[in-house]
Every structure is written in C-alpha cells, then in structure tokens.
Image (cartoon, one colour):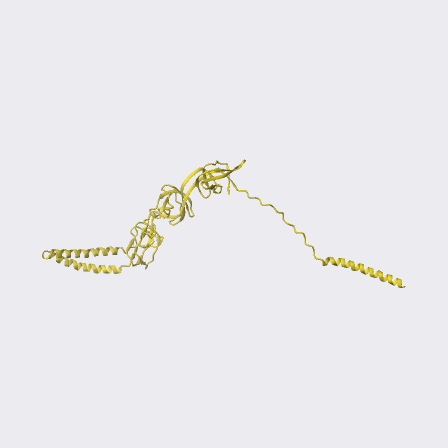
Amino acid sequence: MFTKWLTVRSTKTAAAIVIGASLLMTTGCSLLPDEDNEEVLPAIVPPQISKKPEYEVTTATIETKKTAIGKMISMKEETLYFTLDGKRLKELNIKAGQKVTKGQVIGSLDVDDMRKQLRTDKLQFSRDQVQMKDTLRKKDEMDPTEFELAKIAFEEKRQALVDAQTELDKAALTAPFTGTVVALNVMKGDLIKAYDPICIIADTSQLTAAAVMTSEELKGVSVGMPVVVDINNAGELKGVVAQLPVQKEDDGSGQGGGNGGAQRPERPEDFLTVKLDSLPKGVTRGTPLSISIIMNRKENAIVIPPSALRSIGSRTYVQVVDEQGKREVDVEVGQTTSTQVEILQGLKPGQKVVGR
C-alpha cells in the first residue's frame, strides 16, 4: 500500500516538472529581447571624374556692338521759358498734348506794376518833350556844354521808355513754330524764375531714335555706322548713325554748360540720333528703346565659346581633342563677344576643343 502511494506521487511530480519545463520554454522566448534585423549598407560607388565639355569649331557671323538706352525724340523741338524773373504766371493758354500754331500766345506773366510804371514814365516824358522843345529854342542862348548835357539826358529818358517796353513785351510767351505741347511744367499762378522750363513744343512728324552717350562710350563711333534699334512694343528696326551729340563745355560743375545751376533742358543736338529705314505706326515721342551700334561685323568667322579659350601669360591657346587624344594649340584671337571668340589662326571648322 505504501509502495503504491509513493509510485503515484512520484508520477504526479514528474508530470508537474515536465509541464513546468514546457511553460518555461514557451514563456522564456517571449521574455528575451528581439534580435535587431541586419542593417543593409548601400553599395559604395567610387566617384567619377566629370568629363570636360567639348565644342565643335564652327563658322558664324560675329559682331562687336555698343549698346545704349534711349528714346524717340523730335528733331524739331524747343523748350520755352520766360526771361523775366520773380513774376506770377497770370495766364496759361495751353495743356499737355495740345496742338499750337506759330505765334500763338502760350502764357503771360502778371506785370501790371510794370505797365503802371511805364504809363507814369510816358507821361513824365511828355513833359520832358515840352521842356526839350523850349531848350531847343534857347539853344543859341545856352552854353554849348549845358545844351549837350540836356540833350543827352533827354535821350536817356527816351531810351529808358524803349527798354521798359522791351521788358514788358517779355511777359508774353509765344510758340516759335507749329507743333504739339509734349511737356508742361507749370500751373497758372506759379512764381516764375527766369529761364526755368515752362513747356516743350515739338514737331511730332519729325521723330527719330536717339540716345545720350558719354565721350567714353562714343569712342570709335562715327556717322554712317549700321545700327539696330529695338523700340518698345514695336520690334527691331535697322538704320545708321545720323548725328553725333555736340560736346558740352564743362563749367566746373561736372554737368557741362552753365545755366545758373538750373537743369539744362534737353536739345536734339545733345543726342546721338539714328536715321531709321522705316518708322512703325503708333510710335510716339518718348517711347523707350535701345540702340545697338555695330562697331565691327564679320561673316563666316571661325568661332569658339569663350570657355574654350585658355591663356598663360602672353600665350593664348586651346586644347584640341581628336582620335589621337588632347593637344594644345596656340591661336590668334580676333573679335570677342560674351558668347563667341573669333579665331584668326590656329583652328579650322570641324575640329573639337575642350572647355573648362
């Protein structure tokens, strides 16, 4: 009986141990940390040395240009101004864009005080005339010197009246020719300074392309040179240089020709002007444009890109590439632009050169 109980107990214990071991194996796996996945490294590719660009030697038309920004101007225009100073603009008979005829009164200054003074001076001169007549009757009784002095004084008064009338006439401004008011700088009632621009009158039937250029920019430019004019909203037109600007005398102010410090009005002779082959419709005075003066032009020139040209000291050369490899070739350079270099000697069309 005792032996049977021990056997049963031993069997239960063994079964419990087996079950516990199984549970421990199954739970132990979940308690351990997950192993990291193996990192996949990208393949290392050795860097490739970039191949320098190669260019074919070609022929093309090459041009050297000088470019200036300008506008359409009239070859017949004039800036009008008063020569009286410190007067108010009493009348203004024009508006910007208005057509005017030769001799038409543009405006007038308030010179009522001058007119009043002139009337008074004329009345006084009438008295002087009566007195002078009496002096002439007494000429033989007078000392010759005294008579001459009286005569001179009378003539001075006569001349003063003429001068006063001349000044009074300056109060009116008239159109010098038939044209259009293209600029108006004043309003009625303004205080006017002598020689300040009042308006600009232009003959808009005589328009031309023009640009202001410095003496340095004008070096090498001459009348008759071919020109390409790019007019805003009108396209490109061909022409030739018609007129070079008149050089301004420097008055020490750095602005050329003195004018009492006032800004000098523009004149057609201040511009480089162009004679165009044709003028498109709709172009008006003041339309912006650019002028390209062709200083040198050569057709069928052998050219390469500027990046293919190399130099060391006084030596200028290129690297030529062919079936035999690369080799250096000395070249002689002609015209140079931003996109092309003319080769006078050293290369032939069809060869290939290496860029940088």
